[in-house]
Image (cartoon, rainbow, N blue to C red):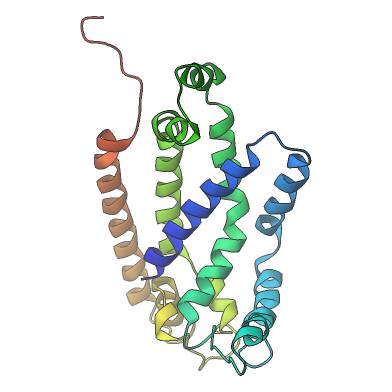
Length: 230
């Protein structure tokens, strides 16, 4: 469930942000820097700040929602821990994903866009038939990197629920990720052999999943191929 929430949200938002910041508007360099800053903020500092925002009783987010729905006390770190952690993960990773997408957008030849405009294409048609196909290799790269990162996630739930501080602390079931289980087996239960077996299973599973994504590449990723007979 973690991957189903986090990965699509991160891909869509970072791509959308790159599309917005690729426009030639005043101050775009400032906004590019501003949106990249979360990616360089230390994980512990970012999570500490978000814990203040998502606190059930005194959090800023619940305080804002209470303006429209008085008495709101949503447990973003307990009952809705999956949604809360997704917000943090997307926020911290948005800048890095945006930069890679932005680099891909700036490599799209202007001649293609101008030719489409001359032929009468509107903005949506330019995006659908030029921008999106030419960006599929970058989307493919981001998808692979995101898949690997999803299964390796440890720091976020570890610090968010203070599992590494209290030996008895266990994250909510929604965010009891694979690497958290491995961590507990090594540092709390001292089951080193079992934990390393889990890591090998993770390696095999991620490898097979990555190969499956590579197999789908020929169906949706645009690539220039030499014509037959040349």
